[in-house]
Image 1 (cartoon, helix red, strand yellow):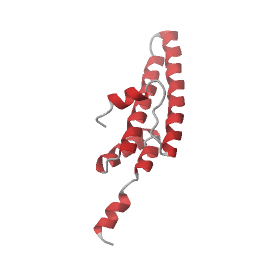
Image 2 (image 1 turned 90 degrees about the vertical axis):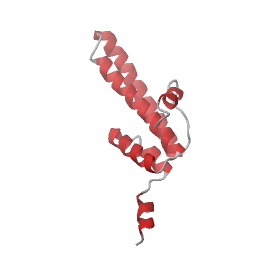
Image 3 (image 1 turned 45 degrees about the horizontal axis):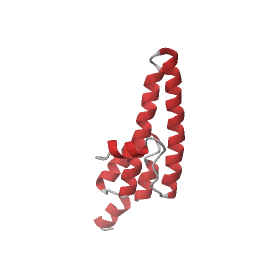
Length: 115
């Protein structure tokens, strides 16, 4: 087997990168590494969306531990939003369509444009 075929077999399609980026933080990191090697707009788009959704979840976790009942309520809202945004993003990634998540998707694309 020649070396070019071996390298091509280790590549992930942009569609696969988009899907894998949604599969836990480890999937996100793996997708980021793979997309750095073979950049694709679809992969980068969903890496940015998923990174933003993940950070939204972290913010919710931090809020739940702070500010008493206000933090609990705010943190719960962040977590519900995270789950809804993740489902929307994952479904669109499965379809191979670049659709931003509501409310924050444009910001995620702008904030993480270097990814």
